[in-house]
Image (cartoon, rainbow, N blue to C red; front, side):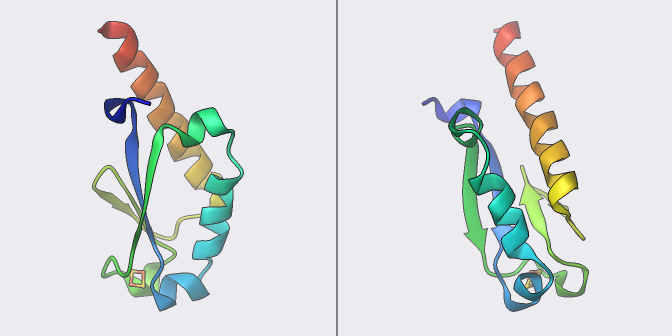
Length: 90
Ligand code: FES
C-alpha cells in the first residue's frame, strides 16, 4: 500500500459531533470495499471547533460541516477519482 495514494479523512469524535451523527459517518467508511478503504488514511480527532454544525469531518485539510453519509460517499468518490487520475498522469 503506497501512502501517497491515500487521502486523509479526520473524523470528529467529540461529544457534539457524536450526538449529531458522527457514528453514521464512520459506518459509511467501515462498510466501503477494502480496496477503497486502503486509500483512506482515517484518523480520529476530538474537536474541529465547529461543534454546533456537526457532524464534522476534515478531508485533506478541508473541514466539511453538517456532513451526511450520502455527501461523505460523494466526497470519497471524488477523492478516489482524483487519486486515480493523478496516478495515470505519472
Ligand atoms: S465536537 Fe466535533 S467540532 Fe467540536
